[in-house]
Image (cartoon, rainbow, N blue to C red; front, side, top):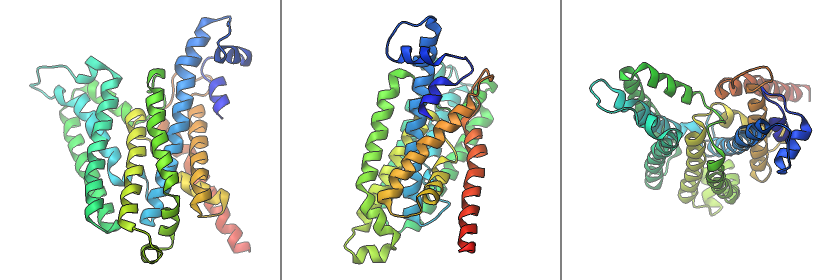
Length: 327
């Protein structure tokens, strides 16, 4: 899928030219170099990393809250990122403001920084609550309430914003794997790698949480400390992806179900790397579909993830339950 992301797109590029470009050899058309190195390669890397991060984050949330409908967005981290971006794109555009929008001055970098700051603030609040309360339900409800509150603030900013700024904000909210330039790929990859490494270190606590909180305590697990690190890790992965790509829908919710159906286990030693691989694969597939040959511009990635992913999950769940009935 990664290779196909480099080969397919609105511009037809021969396979040999793609290979020569990647290895720094001479190509017959310099525009091929620009398309591959400045567009397709960063986009493919971003899709792979974002899908892996969201798949693992969704798995951890579903395990922690013992809820198949839980996803990375339940903590309100994505909503915090949206509020940060809204403040940058829309706030100064309120009637009476004497300055242009910050995003028009410093471009996409200000949007990434604002999204990361907004999501980090929410993550900080959640981490404080996690260290104080010993109830998953309370943390879950507070996260949902934070999401509602930040969405309300974003709605107020949208109501008073200018049409051009509102359109830019809506487009950002549709999500895209093409917003990370090659110069920021290393930063994005490093933050994602830190989150994924922490998730691997949490495999044992996650397996114990499957038994129930009381069983986990009896087996010697410090559930409060483990919950804290699971929330921090999930928040870091979600904040990173949202800041660089926008709020990507569906992947975090669906990928764990796909991985469980394929690997037929709930053991996180298998299902966590399985969710990582399935998330990366599904994101790359959706990215190819969003840039099908013949389409001049990329379609919104959120529309593709839900449109393509939902039938896959439904089919896998129906097939799984049908097999159980037959057995």
